[in-house]
Length: 200
Image (tube, rainbow, N blue to C red; front, side, top):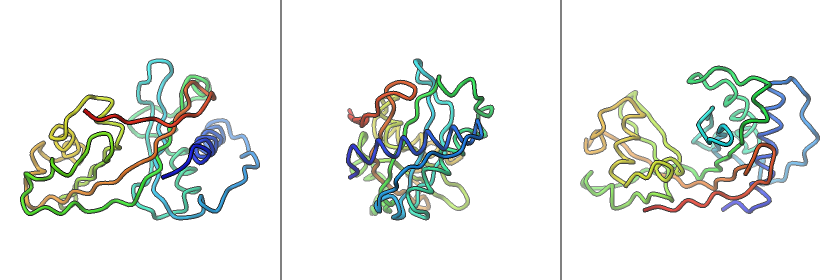
């Protein structure tokens, strides 16, 4: 688990990377601890303020890169999320930055796919659904925000992968879970706090 100071630093690093990507300003001199040089997955999410509507979300679920690089690349990518127009400078002070620091995904092993819902905990797990070339991911905070139960969470992750909503019942479908420590600005450039995820 990441501590509060880790989350504050992660958001600071992401915010600076967003400013650089949009305004072209140089990165400030930020001291990077050893923990941030270890490989870790991370996502950076931009939400409008105060409505908290999604404005961009890009990241890396697997621990391919040092956490520092995952955050910087995710932040820059979130400003150009292909689902939205590129973030403009006038929007910088009207979005809040949220980071999700992830554990490595673990394959969920079940004898019967109907048992997935017993092992997936809303408010704790994020999911990756994989079948052939199809792959989709939803972060742990998503089902909490939408009030989904476990079955709905599984179905929505299948849809995110481009599969039918009941594809999680198919024996060819592979499902991975991961956890995340989520930290967010309370207001644009404001105080950073841990996001507590409470399941149903």
